[in-house]
Image (cartoon, rainbow, N blue to C red):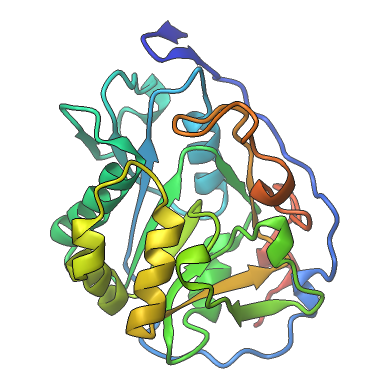
Amino acid sequence: MEGATGTVNMGRRITGPTRVVVPPKDLPSTKVVGKKIDKWAVGVTIAAREEQTYNITIDSFLSAGWDSIHLFCEPDVIVTENSSHFPRTYRKEKQGAWSNWFNSLNDLIDTYPDADCYGLIQDDVVFCKGLRKFMEDTLWPSEDTGVCSVFVPSHYTRNMPGWYKTNRGFKLWMAQTFFFTPEAARSCVNYEFCKKWDKEKQIDNVVGRWANETKQYPYYFSPSLAQHVGNTSTIWSKGNRAAGKRAASDFVGEEYDLGIRHAGI
């Protein structure tokens, strides 16, 4: 399908495992705090790209166990027929990565006020199977958890499996898969530094600073349960594709099924 955004890839691309340090089936028993997640509110921010990958992301997200996702579309995004039944929000004017992300988090809170988890994923990421159930069984990992990411950039890799705190402040990397507690989501959108941020990018850095200053910390899971797959960027140069530190080095693979390998957690 050809549209104003360029080619919309309708194929199903399977992303195999990279280097897995320790598979999550070996995860030790996890203490879960807070209310168990029953109601999800997850959105995907979609921007016009030379090569669209959002349909791959949505397919992978559904294969991971969810049945719906809210689409937040920048101008010139053409939603394919396969995704046309999902709830959608169209931006009348181009907002840029940060503003679309920040407004989308606000919109999720307003639209789904009783959600137990607010998630925003980007339109160039894929997941392993069984992820929804796995997250419902392991979130939240600590009382000081604010936001969790199932995508782990290569330089955040740990040898031991499990959730771990990553407090890097304004130097936090990668915002591909941020899942917030309800309290943290509301704190983030009401935080003065976040509200006043007027640059186009640096979602990860701004969230990292909010987390550090409010003591609602980021937690990442290793090995990575998602992978960054985009080869084109809407805000960075061509050299900033999904590789090196911008990709996971220990992704378990799209065909890895946490539901089978981690039953009974």
